[in-house]
Image (cartoon, rainbow, N blue to C red):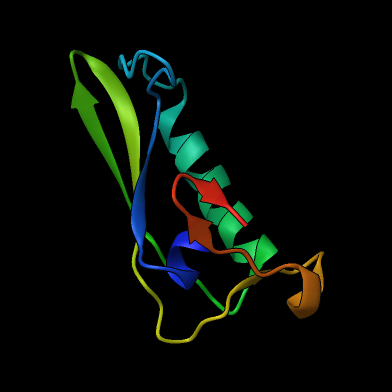
Length: 94
């Protein structure tokens, strides 16, 4: 959501943070569905990122690409439009 409110961005799920080594994810289709449900159920206005499965070094990763949205600001439903809007600042969400 912060990507959509700022300039877009990519998230790779299944990569170790510090080493950036692919470690993969288990139950890829279940994880993809869980992520899609989380986005649909938790974020307003509607946000539709590109979500793909890919394989690197025999490990399956989820690639999530979020584009800059023309219908921003997007916000976390449980926090509301006053407190739930986030933007990217460097490598952090604010």
